Length: 424
Image (cartoon, rainbow, N blue to C red):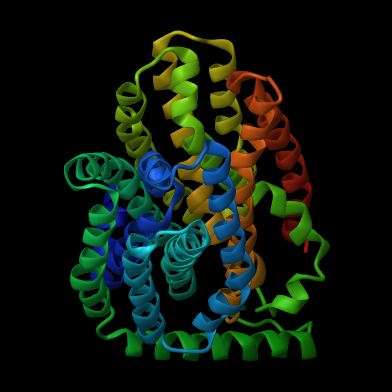
């Protein structure tokens, strides 16, 4: 039944759904799990310590977060085709640029460009387009985009390891730049053929919904068929909404925790006495679980709503961290990856569908760029959080307990904030 629903979605919207999946996959080239594979080689090339590399990575990421509210908002003001063309071109340039740097200052710029174009804007394109142009099937559409992220996590780190061993990190990223320019750019634009008609239908439906909403406000006793459930909020209004700040720690928690974990996974392996190959080899299990849970979450969202699903998304991640703290045996990696994948698959899909449910779709790009700013900022803090505690003398498995506390507190605040939307 679930697969049949996804099959129908693909049949009716093949190109556009694949567009979301492809852009999500391409965002991998600026994500932590991909850049982190290059970290050791970059450190050796520049003769950097772990602290220096972590500081440079954080600086580039924070710069990206500061710019995202401006660059992300543009998706509301230009056509999706033009915006995608610009973003993919920037990603290709970023991948080439970092191969040309030979000083630490320019390395910060290189990291900034990768984080801005890859993690920030490519993810923004994937999730905003799926959230904006789908209504009844929004959950399944965002789940398809989540599969793109999972596919990148599954295959690209291993390919990167082999490429670096064969030709070095600079030529490897130069190859990525060529792939983005020659394959991703034309493919994404081809998949958007015919999108102008979809956008016109979206504008017409949105205009009708807004007219119905105004009619309901003017005549509250009038019965109107198919009324709009959510008005479209502007970003400045969202910033004044107390509920936004209650749910913010929860919706950004997955980025904080997962980025920190993947950044320090090899340190965890050393602490547990596991080989690096054993640790990274289990990323495939994690990605498989993320994909399965994204499929299930998409169906649940379309049936019950992202508002109903979101409060449960952080608990599996907290359970995964508890297992890492309590068990040293090698077998714990499998339930750890499964629980982490369950939480990530649920949260990534629910988050993407949550914002249009809460704040409407007309200014979705502006609102989601605000959210992505927080996500990118959080992803910069996560590795520093765990690294600082380890430097203080705590073990990695002790340090993750602080994140368990954060996840539980965020869940409580999120329940309160989401309850405010359901009662509105």
